[in-house]
Amino acid sequence: MRFEGKSALITGASAGIGRAAALQLAAEGAAVILGARRGEYLSDLAEEIIAKGGKAVWLAGDVGEEDYAVALVDLACKSFGGLDLAFNNAGILGDLLPATEMPKAEWDLVIRTNLTSAMLGAKHQIPAMLGRPGAAILMTSSFVGHSLGVPGMAAYAASKAGMIGLTQVLAAEYGPQGLRINAILPGGTDTAMARSFADTEEARTGVEELHALKRMATPEEIARTAVFLLSSDAQFVTGAAILADGGISVTR
Image (cartoon, rainbow, N blue to C red; front, side, top):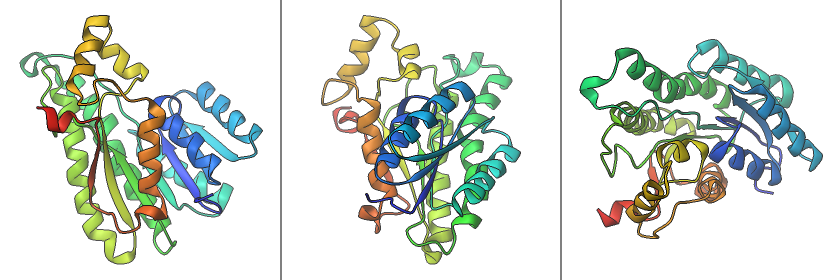
């Protein structure tokens, strides 16, 4: 029960890695604040956590809106007396297009949803966390834009690479006050978003072959690394971009 007495905010909690992390955090004692666009999925997840004896509240909204970032922190403080942990995990893949064919609106949407949302989240999470022992923030970045350039994914790669820079600066700014901030870089993970990219057997096999382990991760496997980075077991880890990529970075 590494998170007994702690509250943890998770965005992108309705599915995939975010949902798996919420379940694992709650199982280890955290009171969880669930954020995503789809309220019906958040409601079902909260009910599942509560049925297992955990604590959960949820609020649906758009992570690209600053008011939503404020509202999630307010919900944590009102429901559980404060905020200890945050997993800024929400993100989209966007349309797969060559950069020369990408409409500006599509670029703006991906950057807003992935990178700007992480900045807005941290902007309002950090003041609520300062002074709370063991406080930590985690961002979901990617091997795309770090270890590998994937054609058609310019906006996604730029947003995820930007999250690493954001993580490093925030870690340097708030480390002296005891706040840890890291980024996790998952490899190919069997989520609905990944299946929209690897949408044929041939494409899925191609993605699997990129990895040294020759398979994709489950959301639960990535979530376990995320939960470790949020826990006191990683108390001397900050400003890091941690690969959980199944060996993509060593096979290119």
